[in-house]
Amino acid sequence: MDVRSNLPYPLSQYFQNAELERLKLARAAEIAYIKEKNELALKYKEDETEIEKSRFISMVNALGADTLRAMATAESDHNLSMLNALGLQSTLITDGTTPVNLLTTAHGLIGSVFEGSSRKRTSEVSGYVDEK
Image (cartoon, rainbow, N blue to C red; front, side, top):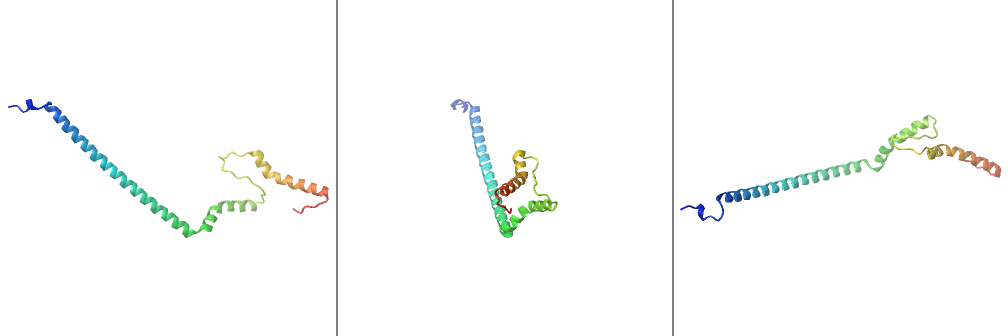
């Protein structure tokens, strides 16, 4: 008696279906593994971020707002004091990448000189002396 003759499908199709089922189970296991691995990596990054955040907050609290403000403005204050020591009354400092509107900048730099002289002239005419 031949067992193959009683089967509704050819024997090779049963092998193909079994192989397909095995591959489906393998893919499902692989996807579950990758999902769990990604969840662990995400949890690790979240914990690492929380640790870094708490470290930063404790450092800021330890230094204080006044100290941080002084540290942030130290270089510009130092530059300003150096320029004042040179006797410069007005300067234009730029990083070289930012465009500067020279018309308004020139007015800002030397406009106060003209305003002061015109104010003095008008006060002399009116008889009122402005002591600025």
